[in-house]
Length: 71
Image 1 (tube, one colour):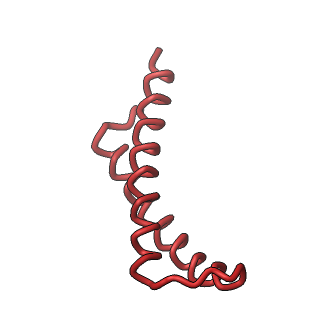
Image 2: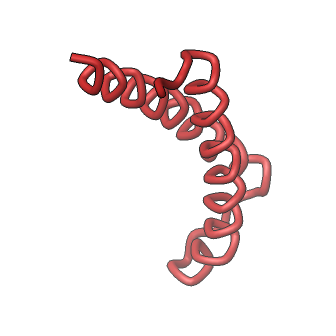
């Protein structure tokens, strides 16, 4: 069974949203250990920038593997 493009996007988005929440949570806990103190809004913005890249990466890799599987 192949995965549709829509389901690939849904899977990638779900993965990235969970990853975003974990990343921001880890930043809040880990940054102070390394002497990095930034506002919550800045931490959310940093996480959002990486989230966009991660969403695109996940989607395109999924589509690439789907293409390889069909060939």
